[in-house]
Image (spheres, rainbow, N blue to C red):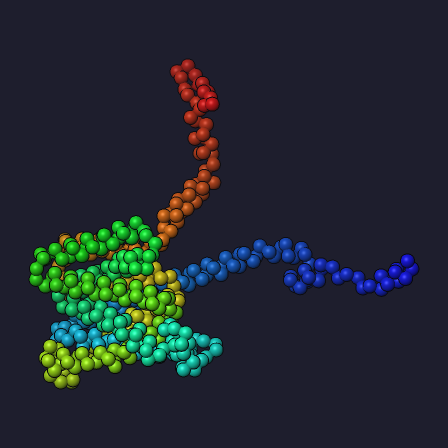
Length: 413
C-alpha cells in the first residue's frame, strides 16, 4: 500500500477546465462563455443581412443594366433598318463578338482571383463543360453545331420580326420564351408540374393570338408575330437542350461555351452571308457605306446583355435578372411612344399586359403555395401575440346571451 501511495502522489494536478475556457474566451473563464455566446448568432445574423442587402443592391444595378442593354440593342436595330437592311449579316456580325466572352471573363479572373492561373490552364478547366476530356474536335462539331444553329436562327428571326412590328411588340412576344421553356422542360425533361405555370403558358398563348388579331390575320402583322414567336420558341429549345446535354454551368464554363459558339460561327457560318451577298439577297455597294457605328453598338450591347445575365447569377438572385428582361417591354414602349410616336391599340396593349403577367407568374418558385401559407400563418400568429385579449374576449363572448331582464351564462358543453 505504501508503494502504491508513492506512485500516485507525484502525479501533477489535473489542469481542469479553466485553461480550455481561457483559450476560447481570452482567459475570462467559463462565465465569459455564457456572456459572449449570444453575440455569435447576432453576428451571423448581421452577416446574413449584409449579404442579402448586397445581393439586392447588385440586383437593382443588374436589373437596370440588363433592361437597358436589351432596349438599346432593339432600338439600334430599328435605327439601322432605316438605311441598311441585312438581318442575317447583322446576326452573323453580332454573334462573332461572342469570341470576346472568354477574354472578358479571364480579365476579371486576373483582376479578382488571389491564385491566378495561366490562360491555357483556365481554358482546360472551363472546357470540362463538354466532358471530362475537355473540348475535342469531335465535341466541337457535335456540341457547337446544333447550339450555334439555334442561336443564329433565334437572333435572325428576332431581327426579322423587328422589321414587321414595333420594338414593344417584339420584346413582349419574345418574353413568351419563358412559357415555352416550361412546356418543353415539362415534356422533355419531366420537370415538376405546376398549375400556376400552366395558367401562365395559357396567358402567353392568349397574348400571342391577340397580338396577331390586332391588325387582322393578314399582312405584316401576322408575319411579324410568327417571326417573334419563332424566335422565342427557338430560344426556349436552345435552353432546354443546353440543360439536357450540358447541365448547369458556372461563369467560366459559360464564357468558354459562348466563345466556342463565336468561333464556330466565324469558321462555318461565314459562307452564308457571302452567298447572300453574291445572290444580292443582302447586298451593299461597298464596305465603307456600312453603318459600322450602329453595327458595333448593336453587337456590343448584345454581348453586354449576355455577359450581364451570366455575371448576375453569381452576384444576385436569378429572379431579379428575369425582372430586368421583362422591364425591357415598358422601356421599349416609352421610346416608341415618345420618339417614334407609336399609337398602341387597345388589343395590342391588352396582349402585352397579358404576356407580361404570364411572364411574372412563371417566376413564382415551385413551393410558392407552401410559402404563401406559411406567411399567412406567421401573420396570424404575430397578430395573436400582439392582441391576446381579443382572442380571450372572442372565446368568452359566445358563451353569454343577454335578455331584457339580465345576463345569463349558457354553457356550451
